[in-house]
Length: 349
Image 1 (cartoon, one colour):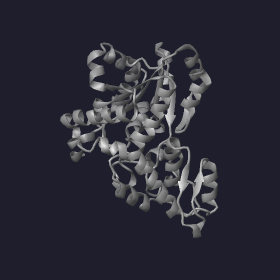
Image 2: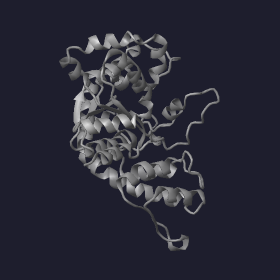
Image 3: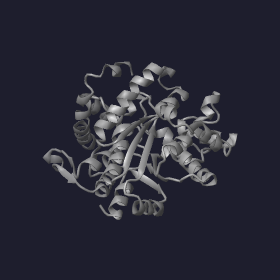
Image 4: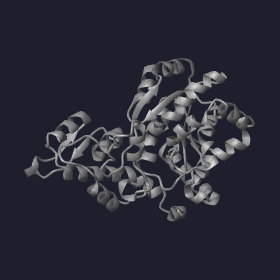
């Protein structure tokens, strides 16, 4: 595969940003198998955003000939008070995450954080070296990477989180770091501080955050960080009806989609249209809306722009759109759902 085709796969949606494309091009010109990662906290059942959208992007990297890795950040999970700080549960759920990504992203490598720290002798030395370039105020501003704000009551370990995430990148010897837009701040810290230390600066790739199914959070007048708005509106397992879990059965998917925010004639901040754009049309070449003949009959789209335009002109009713989205999502979820049908660990999540 030629360099431009490989770049095209990296730039393909759901990618929103690459920092920088020129650096990515140079990387592909000089490295036949660059090393990539995405780091994930372990925090309950996976959903449409955390496995499917993320997995689509990982698969794009694999198709581009990149050595792709999913880093299961078990210590970060503990620090961020996920899974009740129960190490037994963290270990068990890590196995589930690893299995899910290996199933959905054939060829991906799974790396456990605690294993890295046990085997990489210079990890804590590098952690301290990086931390010497971090002020307390900068650390506090970076806490949105863990879904926290500087106004919250924090324990000391949580202040270590940004430097640990940066030290992970150094320890893994990465050429490409990949995350949702909610992790952008840490990657910009890496790009600022790594050159001062003489460390390799990886390309940063940030993908779109799939919004929850509820009406999106309004951007407060006193909020000046668009990234914080994206994070507050993203699909989350903590609000069950706002997200599609990878284990939801056909009727549950249909019920959640039927209740989803989808104002007639309005495409902006519309989660149903986002699912079509970033999930369905990434996996299928066409999207068919099934309608009775008296309402115009079935209509097929292979271009999201045309679908969006028709929706804004009220040529498509939300119910018809939702019914079709449910059908496609069930097709995507069914093999994953079946793969995990006997996993009892999921009963406790």
